[in-house]
Image (cartoon, rainbow, N blue to C red; front, side, top):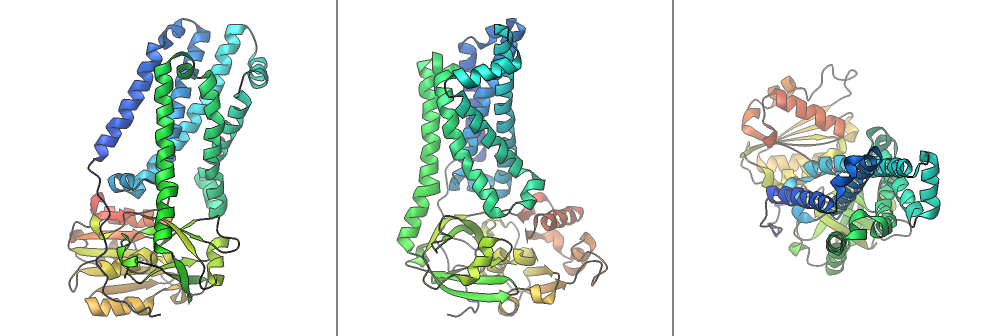
Length: 456
């Protein structure tokens, strides 16, 4: 198998969706207003006449909107492609993060306010009321377990925990969101304000659950199964690129009809002895060519380290493609690509695929050591064939180099026409944030700074 750069093929363009981001926002807000209206229709405001009723009313509202927030989270977890097209991965990641925290706080607040309100109305202490609810009311114990799972998911999503947890553990914890939803649904069905008193509201909430489950089944399960069965992907080669870094080549049927672009990634699941149940996000590190796909990974976790030992012929199951770090986001003819470490992978593919003439593409590749530079021969070949410019920025700051090679002044020195370019950035979160600050200091508008973080 050859790894030489070649002209990228013209890939099938993914379907565009005839809705706008504003339409989705209006729909979400409209449903929130409808939920509030149904609570008012059920006499919710009349409970505000006493302290106990006020606590109970707040408990009802936090339950309704907490449940709604969780359902919205599940819509995001369904990985619906139209949401990625409308909002972009980075914005969806931010929405997912803050909506998740809001859902956890609302659900926790529901438990506290409801317990206090009911305890006050019945003349019992908070502890006595909590024990009564747990031991005598249907499905409350199950709901408490579900709430504990939501809290565990929230804690694992905090920055300090995320940095310490292996991806496998973080992803596994988040899968418990489905179990938490199942545990809390029965409680809402039996004791929920809307479910218990209004058939119309019961139908409405049931329809929301059915819609969300349908999206998950269609996009999270149905689409990947259909894609993998159609293309019958298998590992055809494994190549060591640098210390701790390997590339895996995957081939299959009709790859020329696979609608994937340079800059995108798949969730890869290798059906080997102990890896079939875990999926990992890896970008394509070469532009799609209709014959094979290539992913490249650094051995940071258990699964990424195990790629080097994948047997040839291993079946591959994929979800995706995901991501919007593609040529479609480009608004200027001239482009600057800035890669840090293994973040070169999607930019290496873009470097090959982006339509451009001589002198219109520049790549800045930051690495601590020369041995950490991946694809150097390929990059140099592409640069020579396309008339592109490459700067390798090698050295550890404060040891080999005195100043930050990606500071604003350094970027302007290397790329004097930076103000006329779109910029694609990929690397660690800290690196992307620092480079984004440098680019803003150079007065580059945010609409021309393109970054993307995996998953949400």
